[in-house]
Image (tube, rainbow, N blue to C red; front, side):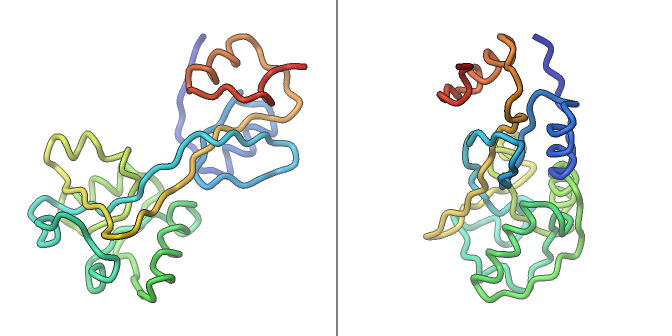
Length: 180
């Protein structure tokens, strides 16, 4: 089995699946489409990240309202995780305008590491930086925000033994994945 991982915006992942350019795609906040099978994978917890010396970094947990008046680094507006973060702000009646916007998690993390602001990101994406002490990671007090992840493949496509093994390796063994 040869696995190649490539970062693409979610709209391009759906196009790649529809055009059979890839066997599988992984997206956050999956959108149901007629020709695409969506296999729920897992939920990422969203957390706040700050520079280790940022005043908020000393806290054990954070309340969403505490983000008011902070320099916030966000994802580009069309990124699904950004839409979820914007929804969190709306629910808490906060008007937060990002000071910077990026299209990928690595750039967001680097901007926070050099203390250009704070950000809300999936916890799994910052585990290494947390261990190394380059980012402070704070959960939200009394509230858990998540981002659903799903594996996509084209409906009706015959799954090769390697494709089935890949799905099995991910811990997914769903009846709809088996051929009739």
